[in-house]
Amino acid sequence: MAYRQFGIGGLTVILCIALAGCGGKSSKAEAEKAKAQQQNQPSVIDQELKKQYQMYREMRQYQLEQQMKAEQEAKSKQAKSKEAKQDENKQNGKGDKDNSKDKEKNKEANRGKEGEDGGD
Image (cartoon, rainbow, N blue to C red; front, side, top):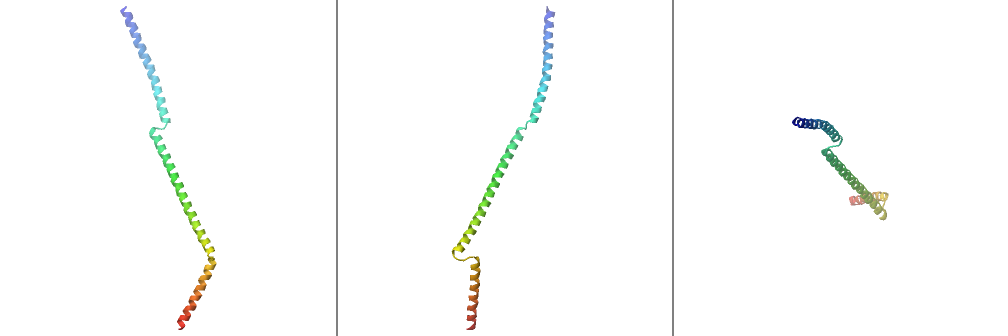
């Protein structure tokens, strides 16, 4: 009987070792699959870098939009002030042509005065 118990114990040990060996192969395959999945998936660092880069691009886009708006506002203000000056000149009855004619008349009058002053 002792031999029989020894035989059953030995078979149990051999069976455990055999199953452990088979399990080791499957765990290696699982480890390789897990490693392949990790390689296919971006790492945590890569994901964070992508998030940071996306935030940078959004901020830069916002800055460019704000800059363009400011430039457009400056141009529109400049155009409005130019129009206001033109309207003011028209309301005063003086256009650009009238201003040049008035300047010429003033020059002629000044020349005449100088001639009269010089003759005394």
